[in-house]
Length: 584
Image (cartoon, rainbow, N blue to C red):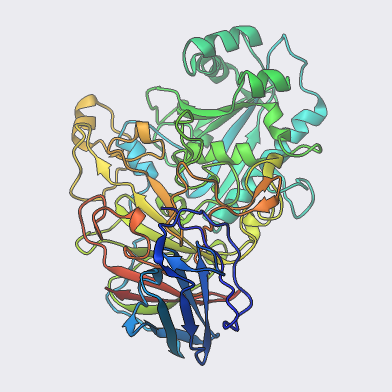
C-alpha cells in the first residue's frame, strides 16, 4: 500500500506547521473503530506532529499514522512512547485501537566518535579499473585531462558559423563567473566543481573536419548498426585531425598512458529540430571504438557525439551543457540511471533526479565514490554524527550489512548524503529543465540510496572481493575470463544481470519511485506538486521496519546479509544534519 500522508488536524492538537500531502484513499476500513481518540502529550525540547493517509477529521481502524518527532536545535529524541510502547525506530502506526496516547522525551545531542568506523582508501577501485578489466579504456576521472572536441561538417547541412564554433568552445570551456557561459555551467566548470577540484578538463576544440560522407549517408549507417556512422568518421578523423592547421599530437591526450586517447567529442552541424528530437538522428550518445592500444601513438577508444542542437536545448541564448555533461559522465564510465524499459514504466529507481537520470543537478554520492572523488565514512557501530552538506564537502556515510566486507564502491550497501539546493543544484532546484522535467527539491534533507554494484565475472559468478586495481587494459580473451569484472546490476531491469537495481533512492514514506512517480516537483494542472517526498528531514527514520518495501524478507539485503542499522535525522541546518545511528 502506498503511504501518502496528509495533514492531521484534530482540535486538541496544538501543532500547526504540518506537511500537507495527498491521500491515497487505500486504507482498509474497520467499522468498529471510528473517530479514534488521539492524545498528544507535548514534550519539552521538541514537538510531535502526525500525518495520516485517512480522513484527519474521522480517523478509523486501518488508517495509517506517521508520527514525526522533531527535536529543537541541539537535541535528539531518546524515546517515542505510544500506548506504553517505545516506537522510536518504527513511527508508522496502523490504527487498531480506539485510543492512542503519544509522548516523547529529548536530550542534548552530542557527536559520538566510534573508533570502528573507517574511511574508504584513496586508492580504491574505480570505474577505470572496471573498464580496464574488460579491455576498454575510458576517460580518467582524476587529474588534468585533455579531451578533443571535433566540429564535424556534413556537406548537405549549413556549415558552422563563427558564432556556432564559439558556442561549442564556451559550452565546453566557458565560465559562469565571467559570463562566458551565462546560463549555467560549462562541462569543464561543472566537473571541476562536482569532483571537488579533482578533475580538471581541458577541452581542445580542433579545426573543423569536413565529413567524407554526407549527413544522409551518416544517418543511414547509424540506423543500420549502432555507431557504424560515427566509427567510420573516427577512422577518417584520426588521419586528418588538426588544431590551428597543425597535425594533432595524440600523445598529449593519453594522461594515464594506457595507449588510448582519453576522450573525444564529435559535434555535428546538423541543426534540424524535428530530425534530431523527433526522429532521433544525430542523437547524443557515448560509445567505444574497439581499437588496439598504442602507447607511442594512442588510438581512439571512448567517444561521445551529438548534434549541435543539444547546446541550445533549454535556453534560447544557447550554451546549455546539460546533455554534454551527462554524456561526459558516460565517458567517465557511469551508467544511465534512467530505465530503457519505457513500455513498462518511464520512471526509474532514482525518480529522474540525477545527472545520469534526467541530466539535471549534480552527480550523487555513489557516482562520485565510483569515480574516486570522495571517500565515504563506513559506519561500523552505533554513533551520533553531524553530516555536512554533500555538494560543498563531499561528505557521505555508508551503512552496510552485518557481514559485508566493503573496500570499494562495488558492493551492496546504503549511501547517505546531506542535500542542500545550492551550488550545482541551484539552477535545477529553481526551474524545470526543458520546461517539463521535474524540479529538484528547494529544501534541505538527507538522500539515501540503496546501491547494488556487486561485481561478477564473465561467467556470471559473484567475486568474493570488491577490491582490485589494474594498471592497464587487459589484452586477451583469456585475461578477460580471468580478470574481467562486470557490474551485475542496472537501473534498466531487463538489462540487469541479477534483476536488481544498480542505484535506488529510498523514500521516507516507503514508496518506490519505480512505476510510481518522479521525485521532486512536477508541473500539473494544480501547479507544482511533490507526489513522493524524497528527502529525509528532521524526525524521519530509516531502517528495515520503517521502509520494508526496500528490503527482502524483513531485514535482508539482496546478498542475503542482514541489515540492522537504524538512522534517525534529529535536526537539520544550513551547516549540517545531526544524525543518530544505532543497531536494532
